[in-house]
Amino acid sequence: MKRILIIVPAFNEEENIRGVILKLFSENDAWDILVINDASLDRTSEIARQTRLATVIDLPINLGIGGCVQTGFRYAKNNGYDFALQFDGDGQHSAEEIHKLLEIVTNNEADVAIGSRFRQKHQGFKSSVSRRIGIRIFEWFSYLLIRQRITDHTSGFRAYNRKALRFLADYYPTDFPEPEVIILLGKNGFRIRETYTQMHERKGGVSSIPITKGPYYMIKVMLAMFMSSIRSKIYRHD
Amino acid sequence: MIDMISQIGINVRTTQYIAIAVSISLFLYILFLVRNKKIKEEYSLLWLSSSIVFIFFSIWRDGLEFFAGLIGIAYPPAALFLILLLAVFLILIEFSINISKLSEKNKVLTQELALLKKEVEDLKTGKQAENTVGGDDLENIEPVDKPVEK
Image 1 (cartoon, rainbow over the protein chains, first blue to last red):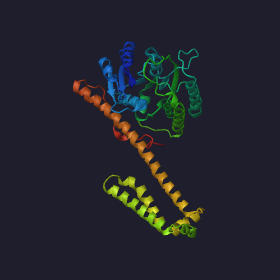
Image 2: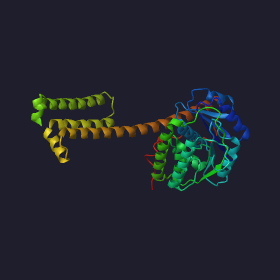
Image 3: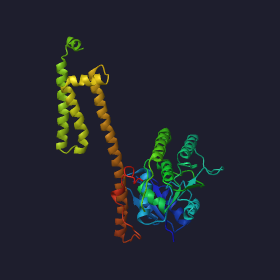
Image 4: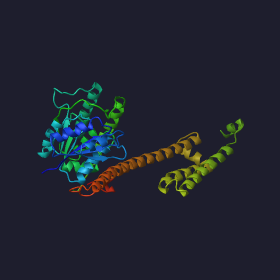
């Protein structure tokens, strides 16, 4: 029996976290649910614990999404999980779509499966023009760097196999990690596969990228992507 | 040049004495801070060496003029500014490196602490974690610095 860990990063998600955990549990009760509470100021941790369906880890200091998710990979590595899936605590991802992503990694079609909002034309997801332009630029930029067509770089809806999660437990960027991770993985020879997944509009909480920080975000992320692409490949023995 | 300045009533010697006094005090202040363990030795090296350069040039004026002439700077004190600026740059870059290292270490420590807290919690409530390989250690904290390269 392959062991699967669902990593749920959560920062101030007291409104959503209970719903997310229940949804995950009802989807498949064999999955282990791990909530990483990124030093929330509200009752996220308490509410998650009350469900008794999830393991809850509380970070003593707020690390941001990168450090938060990486804690999940470390947990997965330490506890010998075969697959890990990131599922955001804000309710944006749909639990029914998890199977699609897990299928790709469990069938060994890829090391990493990314859920994309843009793989299909009739998308149920509306985002602002500026955000779409940014996503286009990422698509073009990462094709330039690693020759892979990825349509949704900012998606945090991802499944990883054992090899990938063990790698990311040691190497995971902070700040705005999602696009950078794609380059890091591509550069290090991991097979990435994207598939269309439906996503919901967020129900509560705020985006990790405020609109005013858009240009800063683009420049910072593209610099990080470029730097990842010119770093030498990391060789590991495991 | 010197005549012009003395005409205005400023003694060039005075300026030099001030420069010497300031750079020696800077040097002594850094030494004092290291002695009192406010700055670690390794972080004081850049400060000490740059203050030695300042002392050197404020005492040996001809040296500064010579150096300025060498790189084509007409007004010697401007050469001093250049040296000063370079020293400050170096020190600031060093700071950025150290801050980056610290934040990486800080992150790993935070993660390990959170994972350990979880394990302690489980032990207290009697839950036994299965298949535990053991906590990660602090050996891999600087992935950017020490990748194993071919």
